[in-house]
Each structure stands twice: as structure tokens, then as C-alpha cells.
Length: 184
Image 1 (cartoon, rainbow, N blue to C red):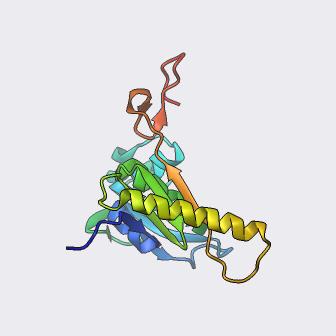
Image 2 (cartoon, rainbow, N blue to C red; image 1 turned 30 degrees about the horizontal axis):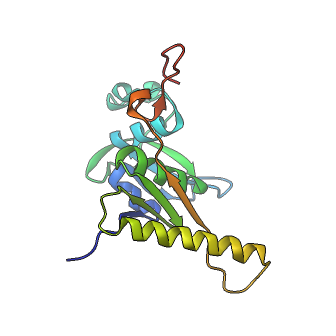
């Protein structure tokens, strides 16, 4: 039996499971963005992550005039679901999209980013405490390495993020303003 070391996302291809199908970098005139098809899950994910109003109904009807901020899809399917839209995403958005998926969809307690891997931990992993100790030691080693001004043997930066969402004061990925009761 293999040990559970969390959910690992490390490439655009890993996002297909969540409704984002990477296509090509040739669509961007500046070579800065990746063309992606989105199925319904992907549209909801990107809209929620960016704080945009969700309007799937108009996209599903196939009317490009009602597709909101998204263009029509290039291909027909993303992860065995119908593609309903497309967009171009900056390559640098991979990490924040993965973190959002791990916190918002997978319900992870902690996300560790190290050497191109974004690892989500629910806190239920058999090795959770050991993984957290390793990540903290590696993070401290990296900062020590930086302070010494060394240029050899780069250990790689380690980022540790914790899910601080409180269901009592949030709706989905948005907090509720306590004075007005409005979703921020």
C-alpha cells in the first residue's frame, strides 16, 4: 500500500480534471499566455477564482453574444465534458489556480509549493505531521542559504500556505462583510 502524500498538481495538463484544457501558446501575440478551453466546471472555477459573476446558463446555450467575458471554445471536450468557452491565461497563473483548486475544490488544509510541485494536504494524510516538519525545515534551510549569499547547491524555495477560510463567515471562496452582510 502506498502512502498518501497529498494531491500534487504540477502542470497545465493536471487542470483538465477541473475543467481547464490547455491547448497552445501560439494564440498569444506576445507569447505570454496559454489558450485554454473550459468546460462548465472550468468556467465556474475561473469566474470564482477571479471574483467574476457566474453565468453558465448563457454559455451553455451556445450564443457567443451571451458568453460574457469568454470566447467560444476551440475544441469540443475538456476531460470528457463538453467545452463551452475558451480564454487565454498567463503562464504565471498556474500556481495560483492550483492553490485555489486545492483549497476551494479539494478542501485542503495546507498547500506546499516546492520545485514546481504544488502539493495539497487535507490534514488526514498518514504522514501529515512529518511532511509539515520537512517543509518547514526545508523553508528554513532555503532562507539560511539566501542569507549566506551562496550561489551553489540551490535547495529551492518552499512556500507554505494554510487554508484560513471560515465557513461561518464565507460563501464559497468569498468572505462576508460582517457589518453589512454583503458577500465581498
